[in-house]
Image 1: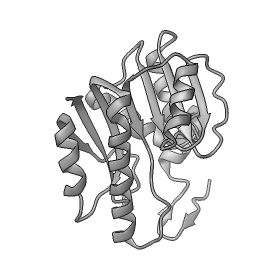
Image 2: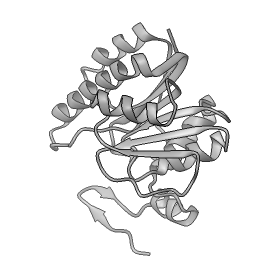
Image 3: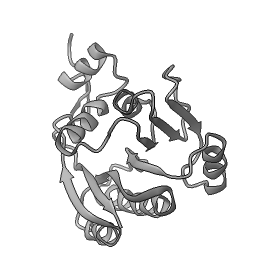
Image 4: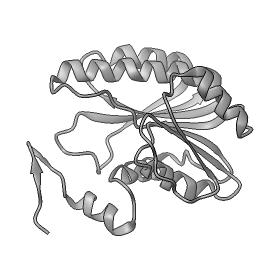
Length: 203
């Protein structure tokens, strides 16, 4: 298959093709799989909230690991096509719409989660500094959101566009979590400045 390019990104690279081959909805599945391989953050029976879930590749990975006794909740502004798995619940909406999130979680009997994963990213402008700072702002809001929803001792995974203002995110993470690990999975595009921050042990 001939590779297509958009700008300087190779769209149909090895990760794209492997995702298609294995039935994952996006290459991001491999990012979470590598994070899981290193940090073992997803366990059978867990309740997991996945933020910015569409198209659902993180949920595909999570639902398989947590098994029938676990529960994965996916939230996105975009509609997420059903995975057809009983341990996955989907909500189309804004993660920062607190009343809507609370009502949905109450309807499915969830008070708190063991793990929060977030693949959220700002609408990019093409201006690196602007995009990086918007990513930091979004992730700070995700941290605040997780304060009441993540169990004590729980973990959170954040996708971050890393730039010169990154300390503005690291500081509130360290205030809330005992350990911060950073990883750039192999499935990230080479020219991308994204990393994943694995925040362990909510205080």
